[in-house]
Image 1: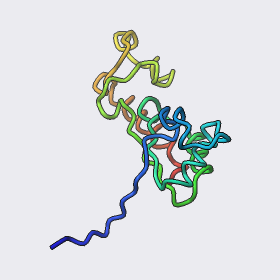
Image 2 (image 1 turned 60 degrees about the horizontal axis):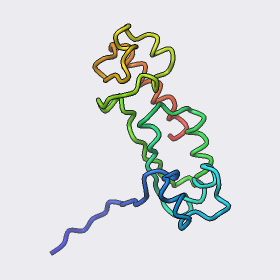
Image 3 (image 1 turned 120 degrees about the vertical axis):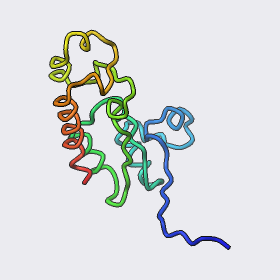
Length: 138
């Protein structure tokens, strides 16, 4: 006896800029040369994509708006959380300049910082910037 499921399952890949998809020459047509063209093509073939770049740095509101512009209204952008928020090592250089400058001297000199290395006001600021950048996706 099975259980009836009513959940909608979406299947896609991690990033429309995945080097394997690009280099194979098997998925994207030759005319899809730019990330924008690849996203448009990708969105015609899958209903969802994982946005990997948001793990490595805060997205910009402009990029989020462009993602929306280049995909159908029912397309799902599944964003990875910024590394800092997941308590993974985060490259200091990936932090916005003003946030880097607000770090204490010891943290500024590190290659990587962790969430715990930032004072609470900087953590809150980073969350606010992340959320603000994603407003076009709402």
